[in-house]
Image 1: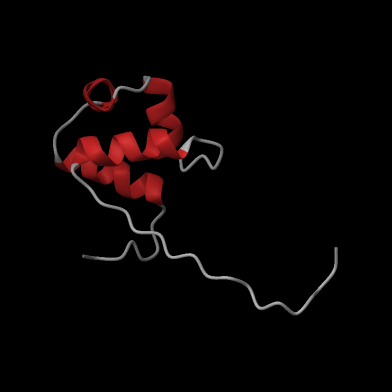
Image 2 (image 1 turned 180 degrees about the vertical axis):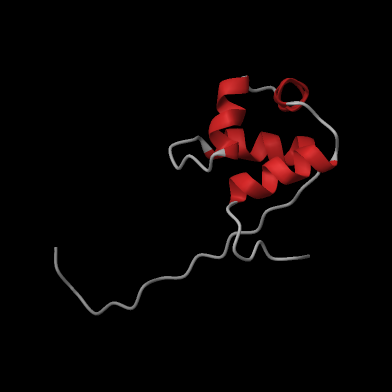
Length: 78
């Protein structure tokens, strides 16, 4: 599986949608979300719901892996 590298997740989704020759309307319908939500996803809007992103990825047949890493505990402030 290829890593995204220097492009945003939204740009990747946009490129994949275009590669599959899907319109915004077609992909939104296939994913069960609104066109405005798809537009926000393709613009890498950080306020989208992860469930919407997951629906789009599933509709495109794309898998996204996220690696979480804990920050070093240098500050023990409350």
